[in-house]
Length: 329
Ligand code: TYM
Image 1 (cartoon, rainbow, N blue to C red):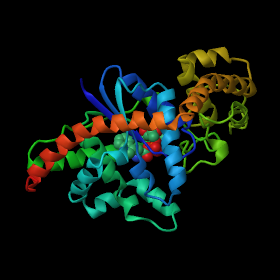
Image 2: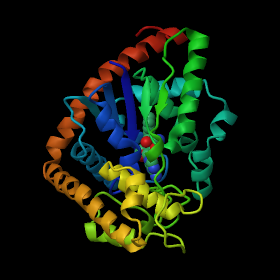
Image 3: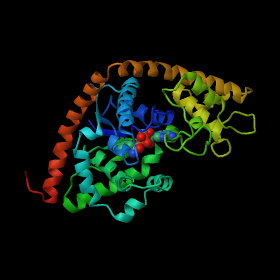
Image 4: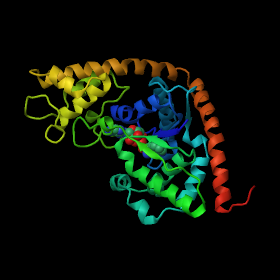
């Protein structure tokens, strides 16, 4: 089976709709047809200042959400990044292949570093670690949202560079990005992506939020001064975003929705979308709660996944160490 890999950072109390529709939903689908590796990127989460207690809690909440959203540890390898030291070890090799300027050109680094008072070197090398995450499993496909595209280009460049210098070792991984859900937008600022770190609370729909809170956020979503419900990304980004989310969660096409809402108002659309979101998120919340009732069991599930992941990662790392000329220990 072709191999897929992806990761998510445990940097918020809840995943948001962008994380789910842009990424995790595809992870769940791909576990049926691919050799799937999915992980919680806790090493990436410490590139900005963090609270250890909160990190541990959010790592468990992330695992619980992934399980509640449909990842099946029997069909995919679900693990925690820090439990597989080979990521950081291959990361070092990849750092030594990356140009200083090349790392500095990453737009996410530029955005994030502009917002931090102090910028760690880890924030700069973050995308190189991400490349190692992908390459250490010799992954072929990486299901992510649009915002990760540049990091995947770097990953391909590094894979190619390693292959050229040391002999063919890595397949070049392809981004797996679904056009309709590649970028879910902030409800308050519908030209910006919905983001854990950048959106105001009113702009993000969190899966674990109280449905009343989500309904209120959707009702208050920024739209436009017209009345007509139609999809027009350029001139009606707010309404287009709501239609996109609605379509993704119900499986109905945007055209069908537009036809249905002909003659109705923005308020009707928002109210119905709030119901759709509540119907989706309600059961997820309940399942997450029940997983969190037994954190020891949750820790066991991910530790087992990490062990499985390590077997593959260690194999790749041994080949890499040999190719770069390290002595066998
Ligand atoms: P993270 O934790 O920011 O986001 C997790 C996934 O959610 C997607 N996403 C979105 N998709 C559509 N619309 C949005 N508004 C939106 N916001 C987030 C992201 O594209 C991502 O797929 N660097 C990664 C984590 C990572 C990783 C990896 C991913 C570390 N190593 C290796 C793939 C492969 C990140 O910060 O994702």
